[in-house]
Image (tube, rainbow, N blue to C red):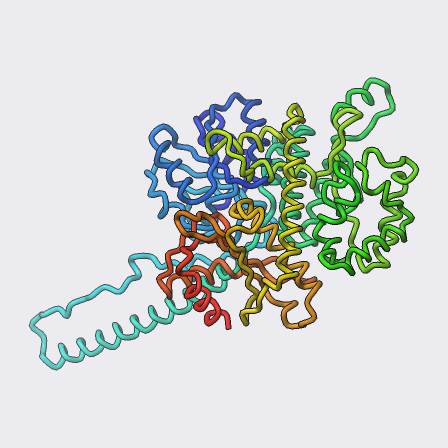
Amino acid sequence: MFVSDCRRDFYERIVSQRVLLLVASDVDALCACKILQALFQCDHVQYTLVPVSGWQELETAFLEHKDQFKYFVLINCGANVDLLEILQPEEDTFFFVCDSHRPINVVNVYNETQIKLLVKPDDDLDVPAYDDIFRDEDEEEEESEAESDGSEPSDKRRRFEEEVIERTMKRRQRREWEARRREILFDYEQYEYHGTSSAMVMFDLAWIMSKDLNDMLWWAIVGLTDQWVQDKITQMKYVTDIGILQRHVSRHNHRNEDEENSLSIDCMRIAFEYDLRLALYQHWSLYESLCNTSYTSANLKLWSVQGQKRLHEFLADMGLPLKQVKQKFNSMDISLKENLREMIEESASKFGMKDLRVQTFSIHFGFKNKFLASDIVYATASLMESIEKEGPETTNFIKALDSLSRGNLDKLHQGLDLAKKQLRAIQQTVASCICTNLVISQGPFLYCSLMEGTPDVKLFSKPVSLCLLSKYLLKSFVCSTKNKRCKLLPLIMAAPMDVEQGTVIMVGIPPETESSDKKNFFGRAFEKAAESTNSRTLHNHFDMSIIELKTEDRSKFLDALISLLS
């Protein structure tokens, strides 16, 4: 059921209990987790934190801890499946689910006792009515036997005929109700999309309890920016949520004139910025950033010689010498940096890049360190999916979580270096896929498969990196193709997952159009195709549109998808 008062029905219920936190491996979940950890620290709540990257780990973690804990908090996992069916918990176990995945499973919505959903009330959910999808047991038809009392045979026959007619009518009504139920559920569950960021939901809770700190506000901003960077929400939703956070930012970061206050606020200051949509440009060179940001790279078609020429024309139009743009941004001439945003925006619109500036926030730690929210997202995501083996599985998760604290700037800088490597690898892979025509139209969708032995292929066996690559590739393909029909198609991307076990990881992403509502139909389509062909698939990811598949089953699986979506 939906929790209407988070403070009363969630926080006050768990504050005196031992709590198990199950946190998914994405940046928004990490930010929500940091906010909740800070609240727990204020109130000395005992908790255990377990990172989970898929359904299997979630089940294992639950089975290992179900005897010690009765209260479970799930962050960015658990809303879009029937939790009770998967976990089979005892009746005195309670789940509090804060998850941005939509649609929410109807059994979770209508379970009054064990499942509490922490969802913003203004999220557009369209949950079907209870009576349309559930029937009470008493309504099930009862096989009533004809009573044999000593009445006339003709009465008996008449009564028997009436009962037969009544039973037939009941059966017909039930069949009609079931058909309607299937239709309603299909419409409701057909598309996968994302609601309000979990970090924002947790920040709201802190704000209601008057425990919100500037750090928590920053984590909420990073959680929202993660949804935007990963292309999970529409531009409209992003701008609306930025507006909500902007009010909190001005409340927390106003500057009083007196000396004492202006000093203390310099330790950490958040500011609203109308900044450039260039990845990590303040920690890189402007040239590298232009080359490795999907928006500029796709619009200028940088994988071609012509595109490189256009990039130099673009820089010449701004009057920026190559010597300046190729050195570190911090070392650039101050006179050039002063008006850089205006200069870039003016030239960009001449080159067809009208949206090169975007509303975001920046953070200052003291006078030296300044980061944009998107810098933190790239750094944290790269740390979490780092392919360098260092100790147990959870090491990357802990590192990524630590990098969000302002005391761990060395980890953050390590994340920024990894992010640069990742963005370079993505851009090079996109260029080689387009130049060698690896993106092929399969009819209802585009398909691209990375071969074993491709550079950086190990990196793309991780879900977040593969999704980023797919989105960058589709953007670039839409800009490069002359086929109008292909511009409107979605993309399925496959990469080798585990060579020894012979598995591939596959992700489906919706079409790249201006008016795209970011709703993804591949989750349901993958399930149906796997069912109809008996393909050996593993639906282990919290995003339904990412699956693992045996390499030998790939061709029959794709054939089934083509016929299903045609």
